Image 1 (cartoon, one colour):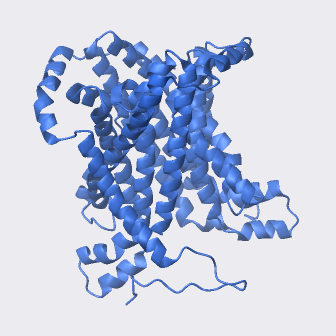
Image 2: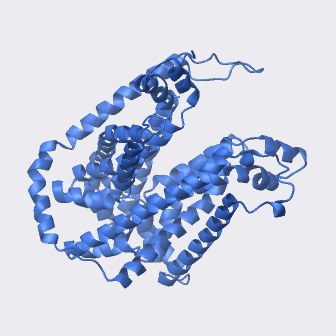
Image 3: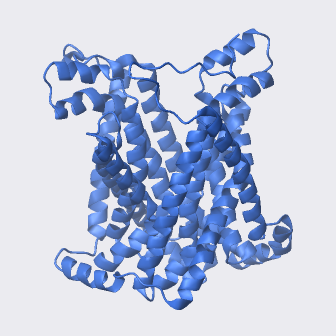
Length: 553
């Protein structure tokens, strides 16, 4: 039987052994990380005063709120359709902007395509800092130059999304089969021909899947962008909350939830249909010669689906551009004058003496919110992820119910969760942490299920052939093999929660986000300084997470 505990000895290359972190040092780092994260999370939960008794004591506030909010009111059908189309247009245009910009960034960041170490560092730098600034902060900056309307939201979502899409795209490029590229290069092809004929056909399914996944995230983010004048359903929700019309606000929140749920289901189905043929068919790894005559390819069901998807995507993007352009209130006439005026208001960065004493505790509180949310999400997400995995849970009803819970939870925008917990616990960091924790269950649970299903089946089959029970197979093979991916996903959730803590702070979730909101409406030199502090914090956390992920490989 294969020994699952002892890794094979590394093979030295002709130029000597490959430099690696010593196994003992990595084991020590992994143990320290595994012990530090839970302790830090428990400390954060205690510091934020998140206790079960708080829910019991504050439950009457929730019942009184819903009594005041009844009956639930919905906008007119015409207004619902118009605002829903505008929200989708902002999301689609922003995501497509990210899809286009991510291609050159990913090519720079991919080790097997970039022109050297400097190229890789530049690509990763661009990816890191494009996703470091929260999208709502970018929207505030663009709104100060372009005014209110969909364009600031499109630019904010597009630039912020480049980091995630380019990272996933670069990882897909690094995993391609190099055979087609070598064949093209031997035939005298140039770099452009290598990319379009040797790389792009292999990574297109992964690129589309990453874009669809990001569009889910952007749809939920569009709800909170409405609070800064971007437009759409989030703008209407902000209007009703500002006038204390809670019945109408609940109606808009329900529309947002249903929209996110439908979008999540559709994009998940599309991702499965795109990735499944790519993973099972050798077509994406065919030789550089390709088919003899593409014009004679039969119209199979897969080819028909591909054409329908492509032309539908073109129609959706064209319709979104038309809708967003019709709602835009910005012209290019005064752009440079507005940009100069906004630059003068925001630069140089400066902090008042009062803010200097508050920024350290605010940054610490933001980190505590992210840590507490990650730890609170971890156990329920792993349980639901295990129950959703086909190779662990054989009963289809259990898998369907578990995945349904994950999809439903993930479809709730964090803004709505934050408002619900603010009603329950009051404004502050506890509400932000609980909102992120509930939302994180859906994200981490789905990633965990996918990672568990993708483990190599060989060790599982060997243990089953030796008579091991399902529990023994999971404990000895499935879980250890999926552990590096689970650790990586957990750090990804913490990284996402850190940005989410900044965003929810703007609507009363505590941390440095609340300071950003006050600075935006007052001293914008201070807002710039706070933004730079957030970028520095996220950079430090990013490098610590990278080191911890390497320890578990």
